[in-house]
Image (cartoon, rainbow, N blue to C red):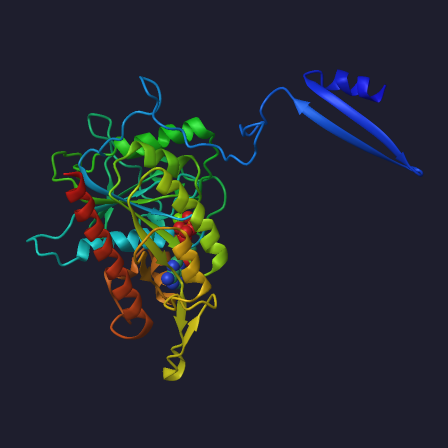
Length: 376
Ligand SMILES: Nc1ncnc2c1ncn2[C@@H]1O[C@H](COP(=O)(O)OP(=O)(O)OP(=O)(O)O)[C@@H](O)[C@H]1O
Ligand SMILES: [Mg+2]
């Protein structure tokens, strides 16, 4: 009877209901055998097989081939599965450090930043561009990047109206960075494609085109292995990927998922950057080093090292270890990337941070050169 009534409520499911009486308690066990896959699109049978990454179909259908971003020679992705771990801070400082590299060529690298964290853009704040006017358009409709500190940038935040809500900076006027983006997949895809392929990196503010474009575009990705990192990996020719982690096993287990995604997509992974790995006490010349997560990542026998080795990246894939430095955070708030220089960078943690960041930039550039040679 009960079973028949439930059938009328859920007519599209085959319902097997069992009622067992144990003393005065009744246990109602249902076994819903649905005709359709579950609403998340996961396979009904064999739940041990994870959802597959869509691949290019054999004929016609499937994904379009990977493209070059117009006026950009090389693309570097900055990613992590974990949020709030320092991706955006490292993206802008990596861009600055790349542009400051002393290469044997006669000129410095031209570097730009693309903020693809559509739901939580922070590049405008980090680059001192919070609340700027929306970007100009070329006659072709392409977006003109907005430049500060000599680095052109593009971000979803520039395209949003100022928020009607509260500013993330306390009493200050809310800006477009505070506007929430409440979008579903397709709209996000469209925005990502526009930011990727319809920004004119050869354009100057004022609307002229025909500049030399960029040697390197650093892309700040949102956390996780969602739509955006997946689309970028499938749509764009990428030369280097760096993955940010902290020095703890929990973070590594998240990062492992990102690494697995990039490995599956055959992306060049330059390596891991361990952020906030340690802190140097600078009280009264103390100088003591504290491993913030309890792991000395330079110890080959540590659980952290074992975790990194288990990812199967091969070789020395820890390409940088950055200390926690309060001025890095302060610089971020003021819109001045720490790598641009300033106080306290000739000694102590400031120097260690800056040297490590420069080391990451050198490894990224070396990877770009070697990937370029391999593809020739
Ligand atoms: N090495 C560092 N020393 C001190 N502060 C740091 C360091 N790295 C990052 N921070 C601070 O940590 C906070 C989070 O950094 P950030 O916004 O770059 O993380 P995120 O991974 O991009 O976050 P989200 O996932 O929200 O995009 C910021 O306040 C930043 O200033
Ligand atoms: Mg971020």
